[in-house]
Length: 156
Image 1 (cartoon, rainbow, N blue to C red):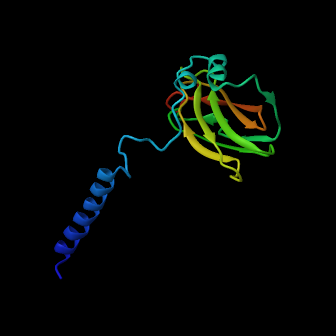
Image 2: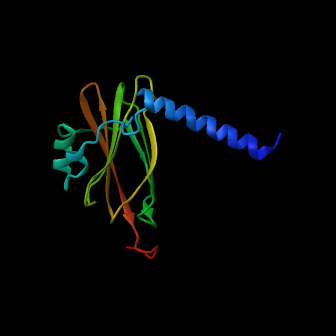
Image 3: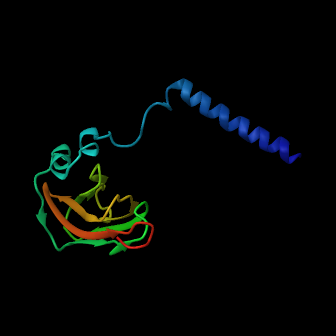
C-alpha cells in the first residue's frame, strides 16, 4: 500500500471523527477546560489589590515553604523558580513579584493528594522580592526571597 495514501486516509478519518464530535455537541471548540480567569487579581497593580482579588487575608510567615530561585538572575525574562510546601493540606501555591507592574504571576490549584511542588520560569522587570503563598485548610502562609535582576548580565 502507498504510504502517502495511508497517511491521507488516517488524517481524513481523524478529521471526520472530530467533525462528528463537534456536530454532536460532544466537543465544544469555544469551551475552555481551564479554571476561570481571575481578572481582578491578575490585573492588580500592587500586592494589596492582588490579595484582595484572590480573596485572601494577609498571610502568616512560614518556614515550611521552600523557594528555590537564583540570588542573581542574569536575564529577567526567564527566571527559574521552584516552590515546595510542607504545610499539611496544601491546596494552592501562588507566586507574586512585588515590583512587577502586575505582581500576581501564577496560581496553581492542587487536586487532593497532589504533591505541593511547582516549577516554572517567571518574568521580572527589576530586582524584587519573590513572594510565594500557600493556601492550606482555609489559612494562608507565605515565604519570600529576593532575586536580583541584572541588566544585560552586567550587574545591577
